Image 1 (tube, rainbow, N blue to C red):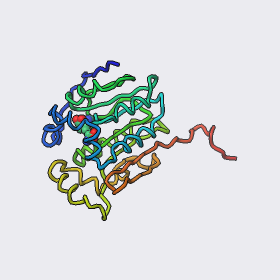
Image 2: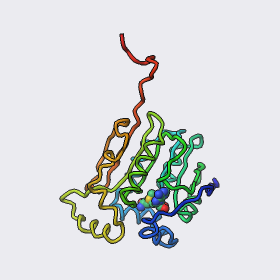
Image 3: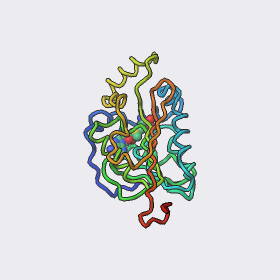
Image 4: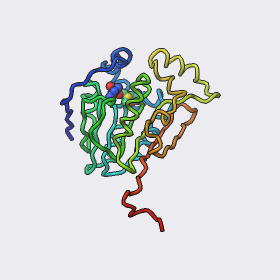
Length: 240
Ligand SMILES: C[S@@+](CC[C@H](N)C(=O)[O-])C[C@H]1O[C@@H](n2cnc3c(N)ncnc32)[C@H](O)[C@@H]1O
């Protein structure tokens, strides 16, 4: 299956990306290395396949899905397979290199890749929006924009799935290692340790929220499901 990238919009590359992430995401050798399943397995302390599986589980076949940011490993393939040939799967990213890398991945179902900034509002509605390890890369103001953009762009009954870092549990022997790694390479990641995604949702009450913490506390999955509003004409209200 040939996938195309839509480059219709102009994207202003964010400062956080230029300063901290471009050196990784624009470097082909590093990206090829990070794209190896075994490497991801080790870097995620064995949790990457579980995180992917838990995202796929939340998605319905034939639905309309948006993903904010390209990823390494088999995450995009796995979601595309679940969405199936009659669904619609769009992945947006601000890096042309990342879009080009992922464009060649998918074998069975078409994926729409688009050069677009997740901080900009989207003019479409989706059944599911995936935000897979993106929030920790950005400073608070951008993060808040992305969270609210994602929540704004789902239909009633639809969900936003956030996979993110979380504060490791006290007994986790890797606590100091993770902390040092973050301070060296991911300066905003530690923010997520005490960051409550739900709290930053402007219309938090319009959603039902659930959260799952993974072994060792290092990762979290937060799912916001948009509540269905009662019909205003009273047809589905049981008043007597
Ligand atoms: C979603 S994260 C995923 C990387 C993660 N570490 C993994 O394990 O796969 C990284 C991607 O998000 C993209 N990105 C960063 N800021 C973005 C933004 N504002 N809008 C869209 N994509 C963005 C980056 O270019 C990069 O391709």
